[in-house]
Length: 396
Image 1 (tube, rainbow, N blue to C red):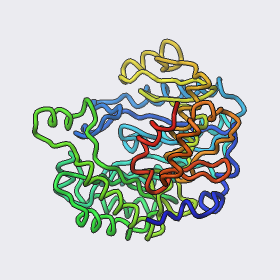
Image 2 (spheres, one colour):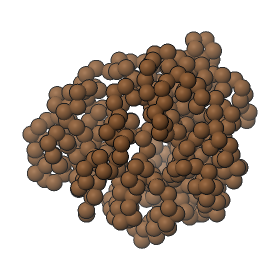
Image 3 (tube, helix red, strand yellow):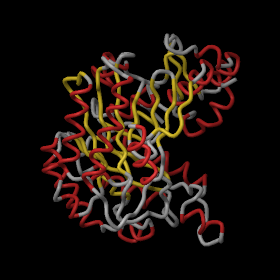
Image 4 (cartoon, rainbow, N blue to C red):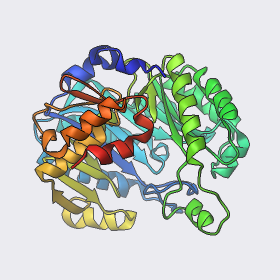
C-alpha cells in the first residue's frame, strides 16, 4: 500500500512546527479527572463524584501549575492540552484562569495550540462558545462511533444524532476539530467499518484519531472477558481493518502521521507530537505524568489524595525519578518509530546508537519492515502493523 507520508520531505508534511521545535520548547498537560460515568473500556484516570468544589479545584490546579513553572523558567510554551476524565465539564472560567496563568509563567508561542477533550453531549456542546472565548482553539471530541448500538455497547451517554450535533457546534466554535472513533468492535467487519469511516471522513474535520478496541486490565470489559462474556478482538480482523483505515484516510487526504492518528497537512496535534518526538512536557492534575529535565513525574491518581498533597506541599507529585541515558534513548526510540516521519538517529539529546542493534536494523530494512534514509529511520507500511515485533528485534 502506498504511504504518501514516506514519500514527501518532512517540512512539507508537518509545516513550521517540525522546523522550529527546539529543546527549549515545552508542552503542558492538565488533567481533569471527573466524568459523568465510567465507560467500560476506559483505563484512564477518571472518577465519578456527586459534587466538585470548583473553587478548590481551580486554586489547586493553579498551585500545581506554579510548582512546575518554578522548575522550568524561560521556556517557550507550544501547547496546552486539557485531558481527562471529561475536561469539557470544567467551568470555562477555570479553563481561562489556567490558560492565563500558563501564559504568565512562560513565553507562549505565537501559534500556541490549546486543546480540550470533550464529550459530544448537548449539555457540554452548549459550553463550546464559552470555552473558545476562554482561549481553547482546538477540541477533540469523543464520538467513538457513528452507530447507536455500538455506542450503547461502549457505554456512551450520547447517541449518534446528539454527537453529530455537537460536532457541528464544535466546527463553528473552534478553529481546529478532531474526533475519535473506536473500531474492531464485536461483529464489525471490514465493509461495515469502511462505510462508517467514509461517512466520518465526509464531515470535513482536519484530524481523526482511530483506535482499535483493546481490553485493558482493570476495566469492566476486562472483567467481562474474564467471565467469558466478551471475546478478545480478533487480531487478523484487526489487521484487515487497519489496512482499510490506512487506505481510506490516505485517499481522503488525511494520511496517518502516527499509528492511530490521521491529519491533513499542518493539522497534526502539536501536543502529541511533543510526546512522540520525546520532548519535554509538564503534567499537572490527578494522575498526570510529566517528562522534563531528564526526569519522569507522576501525580497522585485519586483526586482527594492529589488535593491533599497540593494543600500540604504545593504540588501533587507522588513519584519523581531521574531518567538514565539508556532509558531515555530507548523511550525516544519506542516513541519515535510510531511516527510516519520516523526518528533521527543523529539527534543530540539522546544517543540512539547505544540502544539499537545495527545488524537487526539492516535485516529488517532488507525485509521491507524498516526504511533508512541518511540518519532517518522509519517503519514502512508493512512494518507499522507489527511495530512491537520490530522494536523488540532492534532494541538492545
